[in-house]
Image 1 (cartoon, one colour):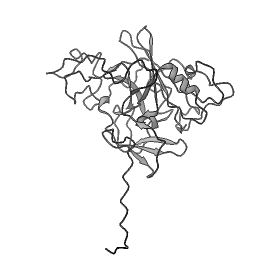
Image 2 (image 1 turned 90 degrees about the horizontal axis):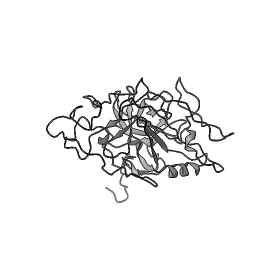
Image 3 (image 1 turned 60 degrees about the horizontal axis):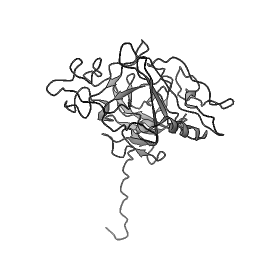
Image 4 (image 1 turned 180 degrees about the vertical axis):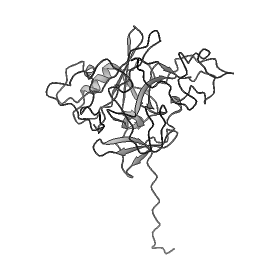
Length: 329
């Protein structure tokens, strides 16, 4: 080779949004595009004001050492089997307006890692891609077929105390993205448990999910080691390669609620438009006014959303999920 001849440039390594922290890389399209910087975490981390460390093991393990984990013998299965033989969630919403809590076997359980009651904790196992949408900023799509009921990913981030969550919301401007999620769970006739998660600074691939009025994902709180729920997203229908992944920020889809959006940010402040493009599009993104418990400073942006269901008596509890307002919408 002549001394003046240049060496060919080495091909660029494809960008992995997950930084090698998931079972499979999460690619980005178009090549060379880079979303806004954030610290990747596959699971929740404790943030300001959190009274429970989501990484702390607080549940006792089952005793299923020599037999499979089944209802009636496994203490982790409170009601029925959570997943079928293909690791698909059995209960996708309820016509009765209530939801069964989901507990998986945990780090103290002697059952094997491939136990049928260990699904969400295995992490992302599907080929996903973060991509630029035409009107909604960044989105998330699948590169492979996803069967109905299959676990897709979590919505993970900083677990916040309520004061910190509302402080962050109040500090936002109309141009700021709001990823904060408010989860409220009704336990029979007892108190309502609240969990606030913000993946804006520290989060996972779930932060790129957009809202749709006809979504293909359903959010289900799932508990593994900690009382802090993992916000797991399951396929609500069969999803084909190339489809954008989305869920209803209000929780109305397969997760009945008592009411609609809880008000407006303030008189004269327009609601954010919805660009989901579905036949059932409501034109505006869902809004939860309960996240505004203090006067808004000038320039305040919109808050996140909330969704809730009631427990099926006499079961141990129900679930409620909520969602972020992402920059795309």
